[in-house]
Image (cartoon, rainbow, N blue to C red):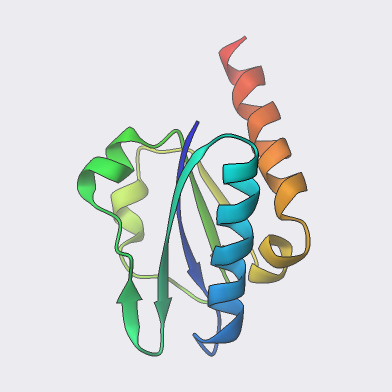
Length: 106
């Protein structure tokens, strides 16, 4: 599965990067391709390309604030969660997404 996403917290510092790190690790350990963009106080980092978004099976938005560029995900399956879920239960989140996508293809 190809996963893309955006992480953004209210301060745009610690939780943004922790959420990204936890999501990437959980997805990679489950055998998925993943790229998470961060939006914070220093701007956007690891910005997703149009191709990456087009090829993604799912988009995870781990954010406590409004993110910019949300319209680029309009035709995608989007999972919206607060950053604390990405930090505390990333493996469970990835498993839930796998189950939902598998159920949708059956």
